[in-house]
Length: 112
Length: 115
Image (cartoon, rainbow over all chains, first blue to last red; front, top):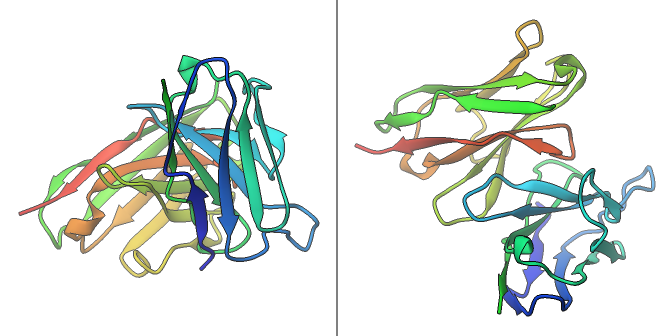
């Protein structure tokens, strides 16, 4: 099974500043079709998760462009520019390369 | 507007069955994958099952394989998760989600397995 390791466990950010979250995969997430199968989700407190980023770097519909993602085949970074209070929650990375599908353990973002 | 609404959760005893439903609207259900993901209290996300658009292929992790069965009725725009021989470790919020990207999620339904 592919293991996704997220860091840090939690991050505290002042509004208006930036935050970065790392996700490292135990296996290359580059598919034979040339797509990097890495996804980012945000779960706000008491809510269902929502898709932020698909295929490593594509912004999902309705997601503000303060969110961006980049990486290689195994190391990925989600960056949130100009953090706002609505960004509070737990961020998860996940892959769709093969079964079983797995998620990282999550990174909690808090506001200072 | 895309909507997914889960139902069927509740409190059951270990070893019991339970069937969850996921009612879909606002998109062409028959053209989309359907997935189930669960979240134990205070824990992270765990993928539970996926089914392809026409229902001909299903996928499960080893933790539920042989006990859970995912299905979809494209005529009723509804997906299902039949859970058999439930264990205490199956206690979780269960979400259905659309497509291989999990681009839309339902609000979730709680399943508690306890004697």
